[in-house]
Image (cartoon, rainbow, N blue to C red; front, side, top):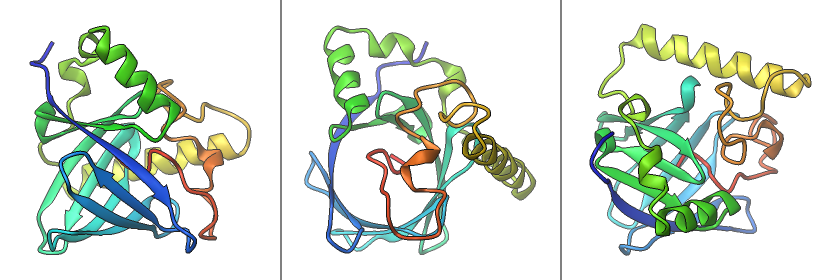
Length: 180
C-alpha cells in the first residue's frame, strides 16, 4: 500500500462545439478536444498545452508541448493517479467519480490504491507501442461485442467505455472520464 495521495477534484462541462471545459478545485482550468479515438489535445489557463493519450493497461501518456512526458493510470471510480501516486485526480462529473468520493469519505478508496496501480515513471518507445497495441485490441474486442468495455483489465468500465464515442471518427460522444 502507498501513502494517501493528494486529491484534486475536477468537473467537466461539455461545450456546444463538443470540446470540454475542465475545472479543477484548485483553480486550474483546461480546455480539451478529442483527436481521434485515444488522444485528447488540451491547453490550460496557466499557459501549458499538450496531448493526453490513452495507452493499454489504463495508462495515460501526457505529453506537454515542450516535450516533457509524464504518465498516469486510471484506477476506476473516476480516479486517476499521477506523479508516481502522489496525486489523484477525482472526476466529480461522473457517477464513478461521485462514488469514488463517497468511498473515500468512508476511508475505503485509499485501501484500493496499491503499488501495482502506480503509473510508470517512464516507458521506452517500444513499451508505449506495446501498450497502444493492447488498447487497440481491447477497443476492437469491445466494439465487436467481445471482451470488456473497461480497458481490458476488468476494471471500472465507467471510465474507458468504448461505447462512449471515443472510438468513432466524429467529434460526437465525450466521456466523463476523458483521460483523467
